Image (cartoon, rainbow, N blue to C red; front, side, top):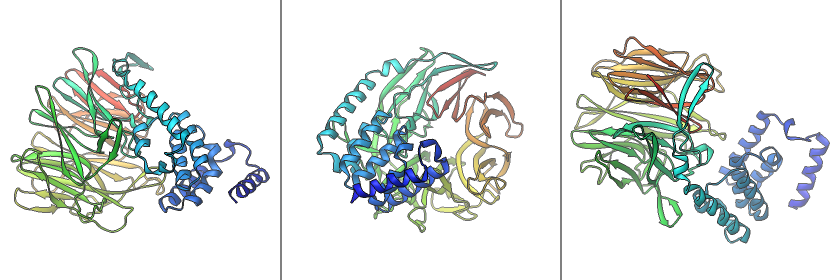
Amino acid sequence: MRNFCLAVSILLCVFVGLVDAEEMSQDELNSILKKATELYRAKEYNQAVQQYELILQYIKDDAGKLYDAACTYSLAGQVKQALSILKQAVEAGWDAYDHMNRDTDLDNLRNESDFKRLMADLFTKVEEKEKKYEFWLNPGKTVKFGEQEFELIGSPTDLVPETARGVHDLEPFNDEIYLGYGDGMKNLGPVALVSFQPEEEEWKFHFMLQEHLVKHFNQIKDELYIPGAEPYEEIQGRNYIRNYDLGNIFRLFKNGGFVKYRTVPMALHIQDIVELNGDFFCTAGTANKNWTKNWGCIYQSEDGCVSWTPAYNMDAGKGDEIVRRMGSIQSFKGRLYAFGFAFSVSPDQEFIYYPDFLGENEAIVYDGKSWSTEDLIHDSGLLAVSDVDVFKEHLVLNAHFYDPDSDSTSPKQISKLYIYTGTGAAKKSLDCRDGKIEDIFIADDNLYVLLRRDKKYEILYTEDLIDFKTVLDLPEELTDVYCIAVHQDYLYFGTKEGDVYRSML
């Protein structure tokens, strides 16, 4: 029956004139991919396969989409076709061995000799890549864009899958610049902890993290903390499984060495960590005995991260497709301030955020004894507060909203920077109605702002939170800049492609 249906499908394609990949528009392709994803999530695998058969010729060079298709064919029991498509995905660049090794979608293929051979070849390829760490951890060269020159100090993630290369955070510590990267969507770990050493002008590999993603660093006193955004647990050799029974916190010491605390119960995507009066607090999802993964939670540790207990649970709300998370958290004048957010993910992996999902009282506050909520930001339509930092006796809030003038089907985000003194309402410090603040960084009594206007980036700085001046305009060729850092006399910035640049201030 399947061969008959396939023959009919081919004849229909001929009659309607679908001769070549360029005749299908991107919108049509996205529509079919969306339908295939919806059917996959509904476990209607045979119907999902029918959608993929319409577009396989159009995605033959897209490793990620081919891999998704192979998983769907495998779940539909079409082993031969699944193996063929999986080979195409590997040939197109898919090399996430660890992910494939534990992906239950491929269980129907594991006893096949072709699958074992494919995995063995891929294992050899991955091992060879990892032997080249010393090669790809070398700094780069001067790059010129128009009249501007920047030093490309390296592309330290260029051996990992493309979607995992993005540099999410840069953090100076111990006179080195630590780099956070990875992928929290497809989970293509593990990631390596690496840093750039300005004195030696070279990159340093520290150790492999049991994480798919390092999104954020946080310095507390003289130590560097890494929240575990995507944990897995090593079983034997290169065999890994995801295990959210416990989340990871990594702690690096000033004089060298580190410790890993796999102690945060049922923690999903740990976002941030902070200290107040000797206790540690971290934000994440879950902490529900029924493993309702869409909850947001704040955890507390009274023994230096050795053990954690849930301290505040966000209302789980309704709808499995809506994800709720506790995000940024900061201590300020003896109190904690935390901010949550809610979102869903479209089939093409676009994030859709929900404005004002906590109502007017968007700040979750802890005074050392009890938790409450407060309305710090009086503007409506708040999506998320991505950065919360303390600068010159002010709490600085990087808040995001949808641009009311943008297309409702694909709304653009804009940002407003607020400052809060500890009483009353937060006041606007920088209103970016035509752009989004991607990152903020504090160094040398200055606050630096990475601002994106359309596709062009500029970096501002302020000494007083009133007067903002442009310190650097980035050329249009530098797209998708994710983060900034300042160390000594240099401004560093990292990109989606995994490149790290620097420029003299």
